[in-house]
Length: 412
Ligand code: ASP
Ligand code: MG
Image (cartoon, rainbow, N blue to C red; front, side, top):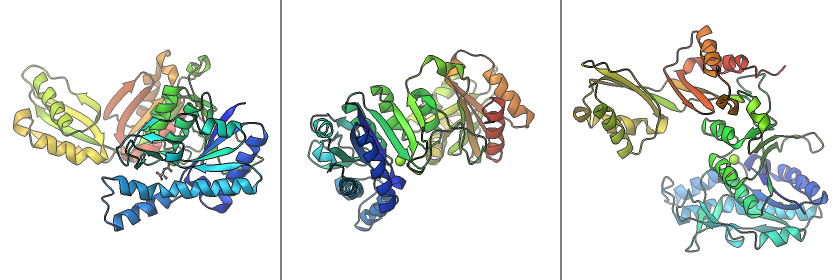
């Protein structure tokens, strides 16, 4: 019998009405003969409410410990039991499972635990016997029998982990969008839903701010080869709902040169002027940044001709900007620059596609489209399947639309 994991996020279990729709979707898969496990998030807004309670009770929510996690984990516990009750009301055999009951073994890093072990020993036979298992997402149990949560959005990780444990199961992620789009549909009206996308491309999309799937869940799916389908829980039950399949690449995928355009405004630019033209200065900058645990993304260094000062520009996540500036200014003499400046009003726009590996001319298309609109690239970075440019934040929408059109992605 084929096994299926269906994951419902916060908006898909936001209240009784939404939960009933979710239960009907589950019932339908059960009648189609599938062995079904369900993974649920807390009801929308619930985790934030619980965080507030923990804070009021004196917990340092920036550095969560076991009691904070014990509070947070209740959100999923409520959803799982309610879902099991609603399934029973539909005449479907069902039972809720909390993290420790499955058990989902988790590392002891509270608030950001990893799944260390999950087998199908208990849940496998239950679902094959025809009883839907409704597992609480986002939580596991540590070696010391304490509850640990997996980080915000962690129910996606629970779902993929369970699908991997169940062996060959597909994982359907029900959410408030009907798939992965070639660009943010709020910016590009002619963005289109992608039928299929590779794990690699999805990782680039996810890390670039297309917040459909939690990044770690995609990494886990790729490592364990779990096919992930992003589907809408908002479309009517009887409507066509193909979603987007995120899976290992196949030959057809490389034919599409660019799959989509993503952007993020969470980056800041740091400029260092008047650097001594020596490799030592460069090395020292990155030593200091590494010591401060700052993650650098794009890097541009002007050519340092002998005897002349050099300049450098790099980007860091907005949240790390202050730390980066402190780390550098505290070592001004050692590094030997003359001026340090930063700017937050930038955004990073990227084109992503597997086909870049085997097609030339992608950069040319990209930069001529930007050039036609007078948009200057302040920094550039590339990977095998991505080209990113840093631009003035003011031109974000314009750039995303221009690139979407230039790569022939606009839907007819
Ligand atoms: N309820 C948790 C959160 O809000 C986990 C999840 O929904 O995936 O982050
Ligand atoms: Mg989510």
